[in-house]
Length: 462
Ligand code: P61
Figure 1 (cartoon, rainbow, N blue to C red):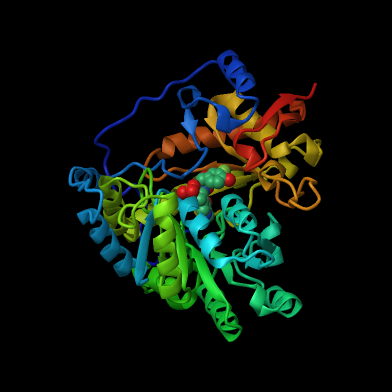
Figure 2 (cartoon, rainbow, N blue to C red):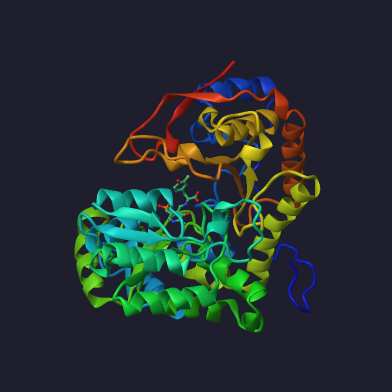
């Protein structure tokens, strides 16, 4: 991906502090993987070489952010850093009201509690694990209204995060607008492979929802990455700044939930922002029950300062070009070698198509979980399952949900690894691919009730 009149990207920073990496032997990793029940979430970080588990809370902060940490105003109430964060949120996202939370799911919890009644339906452009669980715990049911292409790893649709307006209309007709408090729109769509929604589609979602009195709630965790894709893929936006695209996206929504651990380049934090006074009033009241006072929401003052400063850096074109460019670099290397991955390459991660990578395994032998384990065994690189284990069980029938996408996610933390690390990642995936016939599947031996993928344990099938 290249921008008009733009050189190929390089990291727009230089490195001031380094953290040493440790390499281990295959024998060591075999023991570590067995002890972790072949679940990469249960590995100890010290046993990992290149950690591509997540881009959440794993960014390297800048010297400007670290300097801000020293300016933390750790007062219980009315911290100066809250007011800075509030003004930065208004500047970049444009909502009126801000409620900080400890991370994204804190905001999801509050939104779900305040906006959903038992028996409601919440349409969305593909599920996200924590988002859907909070909707269900509030008595709602999630309904997938993303375009069909999003479920096809090989479809090259440039905006696979788009909402299928027909599916949304059908749902409104079927259950009635009164039972749909809001549509949940993610930008980008994590589970589809970090795929963006177009501005045009978002605008249409807004129009259709408004017509029926339905609110729009944006999951803005990676909205800056989405803004970048709009700039490079949606013709009329090529001369617009990332900041102005981001603000326009938010203008078609009423409320957002935010995991600041992504775009905002911090290690912890989140918030909820809204234009809706009633929602604000109720959330501001509830936040003191579950998170903390409304001017800190579970965060230290220094964390809010790092978030506020991260906003200035996230919209810098060189930053976002290099961030998405690094993901594209490793994805393209894999594509050139014929490795099955989700295309177009997404904003935060490369998603291996485990169904195609390990075609001998049935879905209940957990191909994506197996592939994540095999990659760790090969090279100490840690990815994450995003398939049947992540999808969980149907709350009504108790059966496994069987998602069409059975993916292993290699997630690139922001500003952490170099291009040489990405080369090692590509080489390691190739090595696993070469001996893919030898991989045997897994059997689940322990299954927690909620968000099972975090703590489930497996044994190798022999
Ligand atoms: C991740 F395996 N994402 O991608 P919180 N919305 C979106 C997210 O990506 C997100 C949250 C809300 C994580 C961490 C994680 O199944 C998992 O700040 C689009 O993590 O509470 C988080 O924000 C929630 C990993 C979350 C998972 C759930 O790695």
